[in-house]
Length: 190
Picture 1 (cartoon, rainbow, N blue to C red):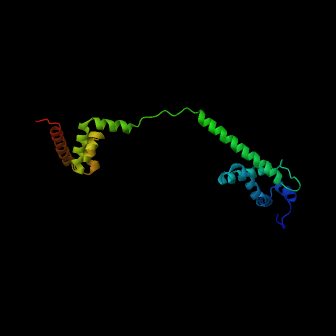
Picture 2: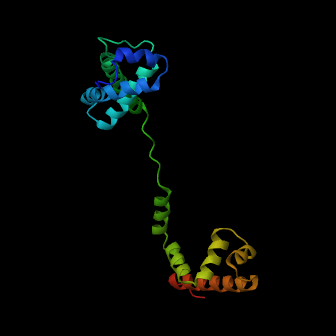
Picture 3: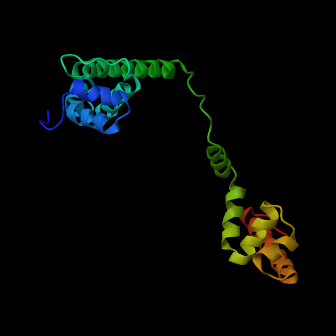
């Protein structure tokens, strides 16, 4: 105890009147002992810090019912710290029981697996994707925007910055190329 500060029994009435400085002196005086006590009970320094703060919060919250024993609040704080630890342990157990009681989540199949399986099963799709990848980038964009994304040719031409006439020509040539590539891949003759 600091020789310049009065004992707890003299500080406590000031705390009850709302003197924050007096409460700060009590906190500084007993914090390490309360923390050590809690640390022995929880074996985790981070949790001990939180529970120490909770014990002092309880001191403030229940200040009108806290008792000074032999001129000190430390005995009351140590009992309160033990109660705070018990409450935290009880809450942790309830939370674990709650989690254990929840039904296991249903396994949701990954849509990507289904798509990948279809791609593996459908060689035409793989061939089509390879043929699209061989097209010039502007043609690829037009194919994707019109055939897959559902845009009109006018919308696709505006978005890509290609004139409508040029887009129409590019798309026609790309479709012809894709048709001939697929026909060759599948052994179809015209």
